[in-house]
Structures are given as structure tokens and as C-alpha cells.
Image (cartoon, rainbow, N blue to C red; front, side, top):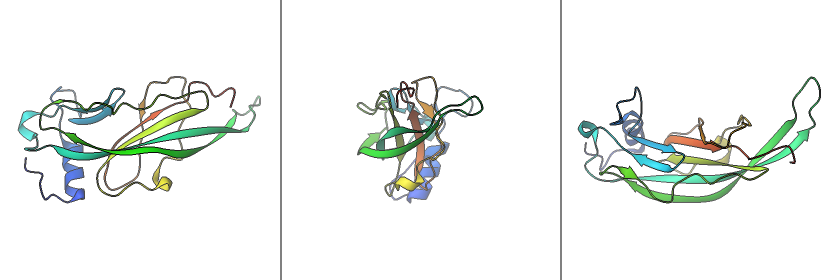
Amino acid sequence: MKTAGMSVEKLTAYLKELPSSSGAYQSRGLTLDSSGLNFTPEAIQRPCKAVTVKLARYWVELEKTREATVVSPAGYEYQYTPIDVTSHKAGPQDGRVPDTAPPGGSDCQGSLSVLYLGEDIPLQSLPSDLELTDTTAPVPVEVAGDGVLSALYVSPISVVSC
């Protein structure tokens, strides 16, 4: 597939629809997972040249705003602090892109990694409804934006002390 000269909208749609060679139902050929950016598309849909994508990473800082009571859980607010934005080439060969794994969390800090094309993502587009999970395994989340391909959230290790 020739990707040179495609608009951000067309390239985003193409990469989102790119099927994976794993054969799993609706699995995507370009994904962000616990070990980073992974490129394994089906041969028939493969781009001719490497596609350049951007990876933005943020710390998610947690602060307790309300103590837990019998009737309601503790309340938390969080804010995003940019870590870095890097460009990476994916393809045309299969493989993992090195140094793209999501950063691990700490006690009151998680992380968010967003894979995208085009313009940088404004902080207000980042999710305002992240859930605190008991796992530090990265979970996929939705991030609004025209060029967003994939996003992963890593929950803080422990929020009891925040």
C-alpha cells in the first residue's frame, strides 16, 4: 500500500484498519502494548515504506481530594505532566520498535502513552475519566483526536498513601 502523500486523516484511517497477521478477530497491525510499539500487519495490506508515527508520554499525577467513607470511595484528582514526544518509524518489516514501552508507575504516579499522527495532542484532549485499577498492567484507553491511533494507561502502584 502506498502511503506517501496521504493526508493525516487518510493515513490514520488506514493504520487503524490495518489488520494484524495474528489472525485474531479485529486485532490491529500497528499497536501499542506493554512492551511498546508493535508492527505486525497482514502481508496484503502492508505499507511499501516505513510509516512515521509519534509517541507522546505523560505522567499521571494523583492527589486524594476526598477520604473514603462507608458510602463512597475516596476521590482523586489527577493531572498530566508531559514526559516526552518522540517520532518512530514502523514497518515495512514486522517487529517491535525499541524504547517505546510505557513508563512504569510509582505510588501516586501512573503514565499515559499515546500513539498518533499529525498535530500534537492538547492536554485537554486527554481522558478525564481514568479508572484506578489494582493492576499495573497497561490498559487501552480512548483519547480524543483526529490522528490518535492507540493509547495505553498504566495505573499507579498504590494510591493509599497519596
